[in-house]
Amino acid sequence: MDKTGIYSKTPKGLEEIDTRALKLPPKLRQLLIMVDGQTDVASLVDRFEQENAVGHIIALEHMGLITLSRGTAVHDVSEFGDGANDPVGRDEDVSALRLELSHLLLDSLGPMATDMAMKLESCKSRAELRALCETCRNMVTGMVGKTRGDKYWAQVETLLG
Image 1 (cartoon, rainbow, N blue to C red):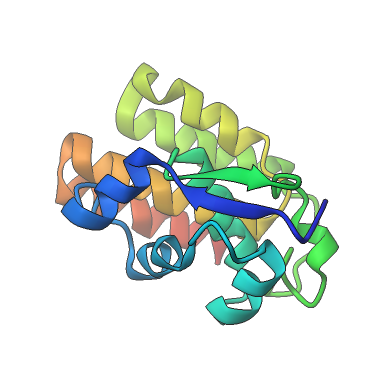
Image 2 (cartoon, rainbow, N blue to C red):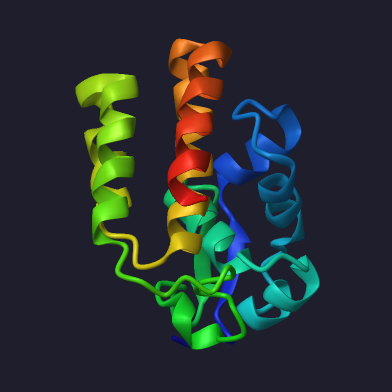
């Protein structure tokens, strides 16, 4: 991956800054605001001061809030090292965890969550799973209510540790 890749906000991202319609978690919103079309990925990761910054970038990209304007997209967080791929140090195979989280999302939203469940199944690390699950939490809350969103998130937290 090219650490000099640069992301810009999409029209949807700019709208989210103005309206807060998706009710992004504070850290995701903070990162969205930081994306300016001029700062490279490595600098964003340094400035964001979160161990899972790359996972958050991936989540914003999956949500269509940011898009790559120069360089290569962030898809392999392991190249950042220093815990970016697995901040807790649990480098085990995440295949079973991906499936559990995918099924949990499908149980919460039904077939309308198939595309997002497939994205969960392609995650390569816990950090990537956590970032995408935060996006899923917003989806669940927006579609079926805060109580169900909170229940979904509690189950995610239990699985991710």
